[in-house]
Amino acid sequence: MSGAASVERVKDRATGLDKFVLREARGSSVEVYLYGGQVTFWKNNFGQQLLFVSNKATFKPRKAVRGGIQICFPQLGNHGVLEQHGFARNRFWSVDESPPPFPVATSNCHIDLILKSSPEDLKIWPHSYEFRLRVALTPRGDLILTSRIKNISSDSKPFQFTFAYHTYFSVSDISEVRVEGLETLDYLDNLQSRKRFTEQGDAVVFESEVDKVYLSAPPKVVVIDHEKKRTFVLRKEGLPDVGELQN
Image 1 (cartoon, helix red, strand yellow):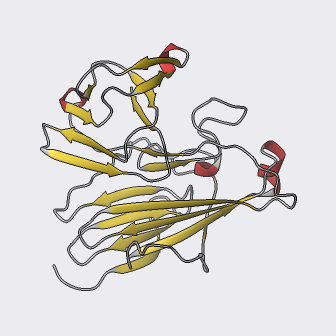
Image 2 (spheres, rainbow, N blue to C red):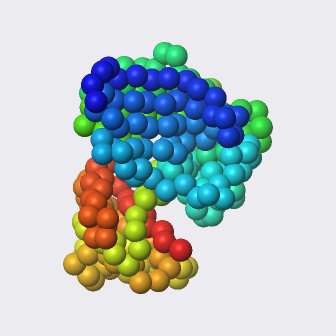
């Protein structure tokens, strides 16, 4: 396939919601909704869908879309006073018409979104912020998400928050999947009241329900799906921890 990269805004026929479709010349593509700022589709150059979205997913305001890549902010999980995983994934984002310059170019095929604190949100989380998100697709089909969160409170008083990209990868039987790069790390086990343990195996495998947060994880983590003969290489910067959830 040849041609130029493109970014197109469309209204999804099934949901009635606006989304952006990013396409690269070699065949890869990404779909990201304004609702939740959520990526729901990522196809590589071989036409393989790399993300999972439940066939029971609800694309309705105030309901989180189960699948894709959820933006969890300003709270991860239920460790706080807000709703599960915060409210950013349940809000309509806007196109960021004038994003600040990036120190390093990501890709020409991208869309910039922004979420700002609303009067309604300030009632439950009294902090003013701007959350900027860039979703970029590279010529080789790599997906890059970059988040920038700014405190815009008039008094500039610091506030604390937690944040994560809650990603649903499309994999085969979970017993055929292993994660490398987390060995010997300490983790908090959410199924055991966040008790702290140390990973003992040479790789993480899944035999039952898992809900862990690995602390101070390296910048590169690899997810290997033996049955599909597929490898996800995850690279991160500025996010210290890595979470694993399978249920």
